[in-house]
Structure formats: C-alpha cells, structure tokens
Image (cartoon, rainbow, N blue to C red; front, side, top):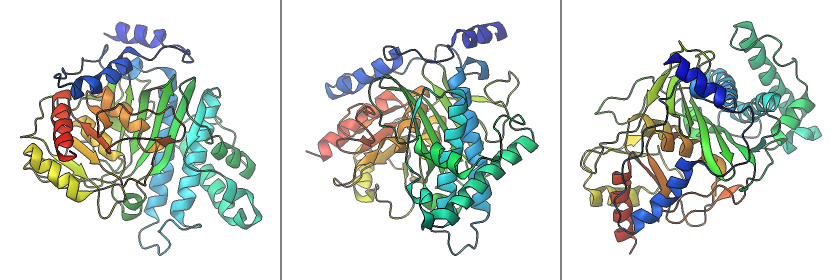
Length: 411
C-alpha cells in the first residue's frame, strides 16, 4: 500500500499543466442537466485512490500549510476578542487586522512555492498604503511576523523558510497579489482569509478557505476551521460547538477528501499523520436528512424559504446552525446533509465564498449546484452568478429530490 501511495505522489507534477478539465469535474457538469431531465443521479464513484497524505500533489500540500498558518494567526486573534469592545469589523479592529494579515500570510506562503499560480482574494492593501493607514499597517505586519516567528520556534515550519521580519511593503504586495480575476484559462488560487466574521467574533465557527482552480475546474480545496470539533456531532445537536485545535478539510479531485487537526504538522507528507478520509452520507434521504442554517440574520439566509423546502421534502429533523463555509466541511463528513443558501436577488455572490467548499463537498461525494441545478461557474471574474440560490447535498439522489422540490416551489 505504501508503495502505491508513493507512486501516486511521484506521478503528480510540480506544476499543474494547462489541461482539459479533470474527468470528475466534467462529470459534475453533466449532473445538473440529467437531474433537470428527471434522470436519477447515480452515486458518486469512489476516489481513484483512498485519500492519504502522500496521494495529494505538491500544490495542495502548500495550500494546507498556508491555511494552517493563517488559522494559527486567526486563533491568536480570536483569543483576544473576548471582552474587546472593538471586536466588530471596524477599520481598526482586531478582526480587520486579522483579515489583512491572514491574506498576506497565505499570499506569502503560496508565492514562495508556486509564484506562477495567480491569486484571487477578498482584500486589497489600499487602506494600508496611505498615510492614514500607517498604524493599521504596522499592526498587520506585526501579526504576520509574530505568526511566522512562532511557527518557526515550535517547529511547525522550518526556520528560515521565509526571511523575517517581513516589511510593510512586502505585506502590502502579498495582499495585492489577490487582485486576480479568474477565467477559464490557467491556474488560480481562490481565497477567503476569514469567512464568517460573525462567527469569528462570537467564538463560533469560521473558516480560512482556499480553493485551487485549473482551466475552469475547481479541483482542489482546503478549509481551515479552527473551532471545528474532530468528531461528527451528535444526532440531536442543533449547533456545532467550538473546540480547539479545530479541523482542516483538504480535497483534491480523484483523491477524495481528508480531515485532520489544525495543528497537525506535515499532514500531507507523513505516512503516520493523524489524517482521516471522510465522505458525505451516501445513504441520506429526505426522511433522514438534516439541513444547516446560518446563525442570526445573515444576508444570504432566507429562513422562510428554507422552512418551506424542508416541509416539502418531508424533513422532520431540527436544523443545525453553523456559521461560514464550515458548513461545507460539516456536510462533507456527515454532520448534516443539506446546505441551502438563498440570497436576495440584488446580492451577488463572490467566488471566494464558495470555491474551497465546492472542492471539499464534491471530493467527499456530495453535490453542489445553483437552485436551478446548474453547476457553479467560477470563470466569469470575481463574482459568482447563480440562479435560485446555491444548494448542496450529501449525495446525488438527495440533491435530485431537492431540485425537484425547489422547482415546484418556484413555479
């Protein structure tokens, strides 16, 4: 078995060739049209190789390290938010500092190994480059340096892997690497440095989310969820309680999806790493499913429509409340079976709000489309257009039932 894993790893190129979309991604594009024609969706095939540390290509190992470093930074920041009266995301809050710093740190780490892959990310450094932003910029740079120094000191990364201290200008440039606009040609990282601001502030769930898109196909993703428990939540749970050190979900098409502790060193390099292959619930049906909803008054939530759909499907289980893209990780390992997101018509989704989650759910055997069954298209720039919301299910048959219920409700 070890020889097989080593052979698989050796076959992975150091840089992704500009190639035709992976076969699993092409299958995904066909799934929605079959569902709309009433054709039953067969179960997703098992991964070509069971997910294992040595079966992931080098780019995904770099992505995991970047997300783990940003997660360390976020945990340190979240620890000081308790009782902080500036915890809201104002211009100089710790949350704002962490957002900039996490993006800079990920940008620095990705460029170190894969400078040819463009970065698409939420933030830009305009506010840091002006004189009025000097204090904020200094705090952002300090947080990046503190995180790198701490990671080198405890051996999480090699000493000298990045020369520190980095300068303000170095940090600004790393942040502004994220100004890319994704298209169907070439390779792109797609990053949300802190997804789920409300959860981050409140000490609940949030995520550092990094996707990899090659020639229009989102084929890899990493979700760092620093407050996500290691184990699947109990059957009667109504929310996912925060628990350190958290969980990282990593996925690559054809290799499946794995989960491991946020502080697991060299998780995709060591054969003895504490890494668990995960898969969404292939047996979930409308009668057994439970769905996830956001906490509070999220702009992208529509509780009334969600309740109507749940009733139409015959769902009787209580919803699970989860902040952020952590929902995608929860679905991928079986905490819940449906994620329903219905933003108002005037709201435009962003690519970084979903790219990593799409990779994780798809590699775990789940299905994600818009509300009309169309596969999500990340190649049209920084916005992600959709029709009828964004919905994800644990398996193809459950997703077909969901799309059918949605079509009847929207008639």
